[in-house]
Length: 492
Image (cartoon, helix red, strand yellow):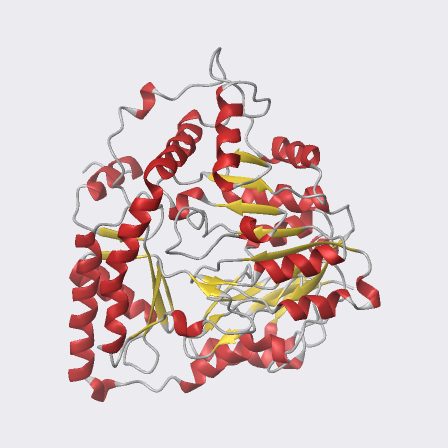
């Protein structure tokens, strides 16, 4: 029997009726394409060079900047990761100091490691009803920057919108950072669509962020791995330094298929984006109209907006909560896949996330609506099977509510991430790791906020939480020991 390979698996999957409520944003539904091998080239005459653009690619990037209202824009073919690495390196000196949201993507932590930076953390608020991170409170940044120990801060970095569509007050945060003459970087990987329609919130460039990184492939019709880095009309960013680091971190053999995909995507958005996003918004009414009908499942909406941390909500992210029902998040995700051929983006212990874009069809969204109604009906009939997960939800809450000092509290940083990672380490049982310094990351996912980062003290409270979370069957990641029994600590 011939062994199946990835190529044939992809070909076979593309012929199924599975509907994608996940990235990439083209949803396998964006026109026709000729044999990709016929278009795959290298830097030959007439096609320009991404690292020294003077022709087609230079004009394409200028067009991107005009579309988004940026001073300069750059194509990224290594995803938002390369933009985040380059942005942080360009504004922070080696061994410098950065303010960073604790719920940042792992590539931001990698940038901290590579540049041997010290970190001061901002913590997102916590939305108890849905067990997700809220946004960053601007005044928390002001308070942090006013501390004498933080006079040498070189950059502020946050994520907005989040995976679940939560936006922080970028304008206020930018004003505070700029009052201290500090550049403000926004990971807007999930917000490339926010500039084409008034149906959705406005993006970070509009509110004065200095560097904004977007994953075009997440919310727009572009190939996986395509992204953009924008530099705003800012006095706090050295454009040449950004270019220098992009040349270092990007592949020296950039894919012309990926670059052409970005350009084609942006041309489409310029011509039809507003109309198509309006259609998406109209189609989403049928999902958000369920909020009044559903009693067991809950769909998150504008009610999460508040005056402190959640400035706005992107309704293209459909968050369906299972909290208080007999279903775990992954159970709902599996049911949607197996019974309704709907593949969602992700599942958390108490919710699932369906990502929509302008390439979603009305038929696809109606399929999701009918599926949720049927599952709601089944839950109502079988509500005697309801599971008490109070301990699990409290465990999530204690980890996420770090802002209030509840639970494990703020991390006790004993050395930088780089110092810890580069130190001699040995493995030890977590139960016996009291007062040791962690050499590894440990996350609860979701939300992805580290319980521990390298260089932080392992306190009795942290050990207790780890054991509690294991009992609650939360997803603990980051350790080399996937069973979460041992942890690497710094050898004295």
